[in-house]
Amino acid sequence: MKILLLGANGMLGRALKTTFVNEELTAWDIGDLDITEAGEVAKRIDAIKPQVVINAAAYTDVDGAEKEREKAWAVNADGVRNVAEAAKEVGATMVHYSTDYVFPGDNERGYTEDDQAGPPVNAYGESKLAGEQALAKAGPAYYLIRTAWLYGAGGKNFVDTMLRLAETKKELSVVNDQYGSPSYTVDVAQATRELLTGDWQPGVYHAVNQGLTTWYALALTIFELAGVEMEVRAINTADYPLPAARPRYSVLNNTRGPQLRTWEEALADYVRRA
Ligand SMILES: NC(=O)c1ccc[n+]([C@@H]2O[C@H](COP(=O)([O-])OP(=O)(O)OC[C@H]3O[C@@H](n4cnc5c(N)ncnc54)[C@H](OP(=O)(O)O)[C@@H]3O)[C@@H](O)[C@H]2O)c1
Image 1 (cartoon, rainbow, N blue to C red):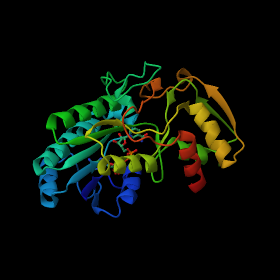
Image 2: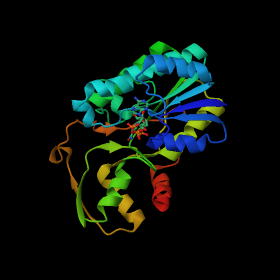
Image 3: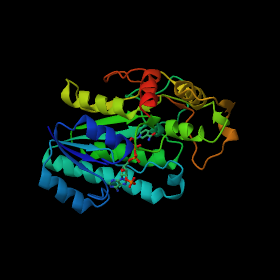
Image 4: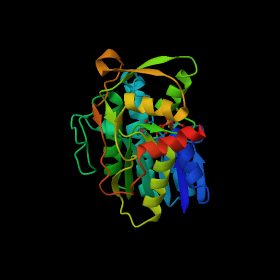
């Protein structure tokens, strides 16, 4: 398979690079191609003529997006449109990643692939939803893969933050009223591979590790797995104000795609390696 991977140095990008290492892979990050530059994107994708374009490039600073709306929009909406139009032009299938944050998070049962996305509760979610719409409008064959609460090697994530804090702190307060499915980049990359190589039709997929938890319960599990003594206090979202609002029930139901292992199994694997 001739694959062009964008955002290859990001957290998910790194896992994808490893997963597709034996394919005919071109792996670029912003230093190689800035996806906000429409002309360059069209020219460079046309020069390579990949069969598959995997877009893991994104603006992912959830709180930063409240102040840098235009920047978030340029990458997450316009950038996606640029890549999708170029992919369509060369007949490539596109893989693109989105987030639980395209949903408002007010449904305790979570959201399936067929639920209508929106309205998001923050600017990052709005920019990602605009990206989903731009992808559909540009119209290449595509796999839109939503994931959530991502962690893995080489990126800013909650698991690494907890382990780093444990080096200097004996007690922490962690939010216990937001629910989601922590998901390991290695597993999301593997699910991507299965979608591309198995008998899976293009469409919308939810690739999250199975089960759900809160940030508080996740922190407890991380410290237990790492064998770290830590006093963890459960607090509410209102006690920990951040610039961007968070959805309360960030739960993505995977009703049609490859099933990932449970979040506890994946986390144990990651913490063992970290
Ligand atoms: N992280 C999560 O918890 C989470 C949850 C749900 C969904 N997702 C989605 O999963 C995907 C991957 O996320 P991630 O956490 O791996 O993100 P990440 O670590 O922030 O990686 C994104 C990569 O894209 C690059 N990039 C930024 N702007 C670019 C541009 N204009 N042109 C080309 N490359 C650009 C970044 O470079 P710089 O670092 O130099 O900016 C970075 O290497 C994204 O679509 C994200 O929305 C993430």
